Image 1 (tube, rainbow, N blue to C red):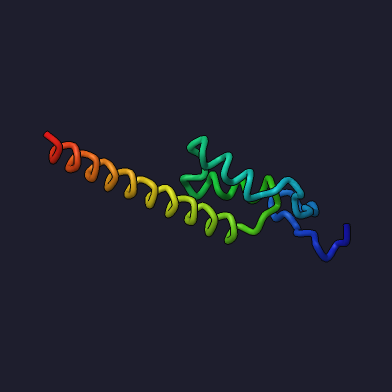
Image 2: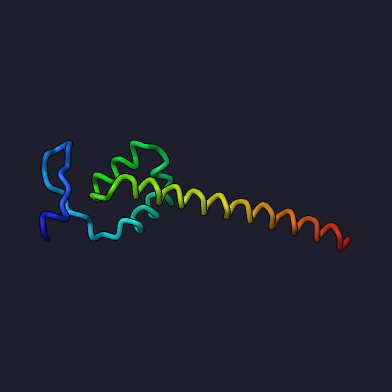
Length: 89
């Protein structure tokens, strides 16, 4: 791998190469486990997987948006089911 793809880790002064372990899949996995909810967890993740911190934060925000939309759809679905059940009686 060329050095042009490497980042210098400020903490340990060693070169970190972009991780080939599918960062989005790992973000989803960590997010699903309740992690990546605070800044320090995201910082730890981007250091561990050598991913741009901005991209981690943007994808976590995207996952939060999807989760919120899903909850809103579920809430509206429950309201719709309750009103339709009430109409049948």
